[in-house]
Length: 446
Image 1 (spheres, one colour):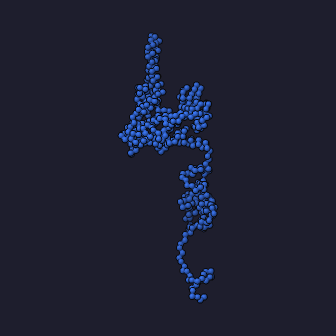
Image 2 (image 1 turned 90 degrees about the horizontal axis):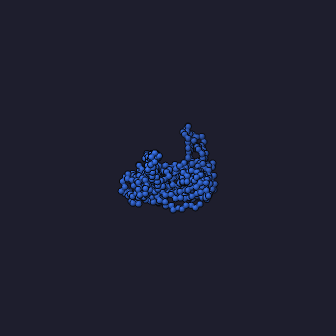
Image 3 (image 1 turned 180 degrees about the vertical axis):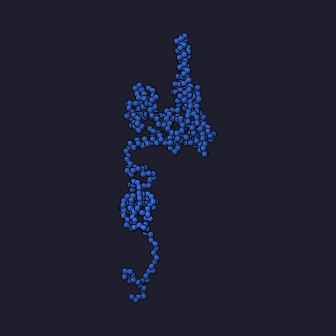
């Protein structure tokens, strides 16, 4: 084929003009799976199908074959976790025998729950979402769930090491004013005086000794009754009159009183009935009045008096900003510390047999604690110290690695005798918390 223009023949037999192209060196190619068009069907989407436990046959297999293995060892597609490259993780339960490494993945344990295709990235375990720990949808039942959460929260407060559970009714006791040997000695003297006065009256008909003993006994009994009723106010008066200290000049180990604003620590509390959040101290007490034929609230409940039936009182560590110096100190009232609270409580609700059904919140509170409400006269009180409240703290200053703390004293502190108020001395044990009622909540009309 004569022509001045060069031509060449292709592999299919055609003749084209021009010189044939020089063969070029082919760049090394890397085998990879060609992702087919899925059309939105997850069954055709390879690794995505594995996430949803869909068995998909692959058209091609990438990567070298394992030497020594007969044929291509195919891995079964099972649901399970993926690694950071999107490939299924391989788990083995021990060393493999022989020189062949099998390609099949060995899984143990139950399969993970099927996740909803929302695309959201969340933190925490699966049980924190709409599914429970077994993979089934979590049941939401309204008030029942709320009651269960309240029981869990109350249990967590009671068993948390950071929370101090206080079991005393208040911070004053007439028995704490005198040691037991002195009390028994006074009782013995009065018994002997009555016996001697009665013997003299019967023998010589002289009642002077008996009258003197009766007058002294009446004075002592009136003094004890007065202190039993007003002793707590006397202790509060001692706390209010105690001078505030300046934390800048306070020495290590010095007993001080600090007044300032409260800030929550790592574990804030919530009041039991009113659900007041971010508290450092909470107290909810249920009292019951006992008439002539009424049931006793406790073993020491006397007739025609109010007796304590239930109490939930907790305290945790918190910070206080001193008004005098502006310094911030850590008050160690948590972790089982000895604490004597003088926190005013408000009467939240009064219940009697006629109006007990008009307060569903109170009945719900009783049911959560397995307390009955059958024909009882009850009174619920609640007090708390919330974040931002003004509180007075009495304790010992402790400085540790530039951290200023107020800790309980090693021994109880005596209030001394207040002669003007006829109040006998009493001992205050542990850290003292004093906070006035700042809730300004009236009694709920029911």
